[in-house]
Image (cartoon, rainbow, N blue to C red; front, side, top):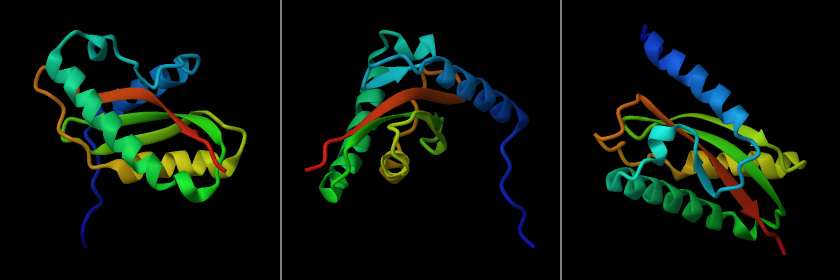
Length: 136
C-alpha cells in the first residue's frame, strides 16, 4: 500500500504563515503582489521568475476568456522551491462562485511553474494574484 505524500513540518509551518500573510494583504491591488518582503527585492532572478509565473497565469486566464464570465477575484498563490503549486485560496471573492472557481482553476492549470531562483531562500513563495474576467 502506497503512503500519501506528506510535507515536512517546516513546510507546513511555512504554509500556515504564508496563508496568514495572504489573508493580511487582501487590500493590495497589484496584479502580482509578493507577500514576503524578500520576494520584493531587487534581485533580477526573482523579478524574472515572477514575470514567468505571471505570464503562465495570464495565458491560462486567456483560455477561459470566452466563458462569458465577468468579475475579479484575488487568489493567494503559494509555490514551493520546485515550482509546484502547494496552495491556492480565494483572498477576495468576486461575489460569484463561478468566477471564484474559475480563478482558482486558472492558477491550478497554469502550473507547473519554474523552479524558484537560488537567491530566494525560503521554502515557499506566496503572492496575491488578481484574476480579472471581462465576459461579453
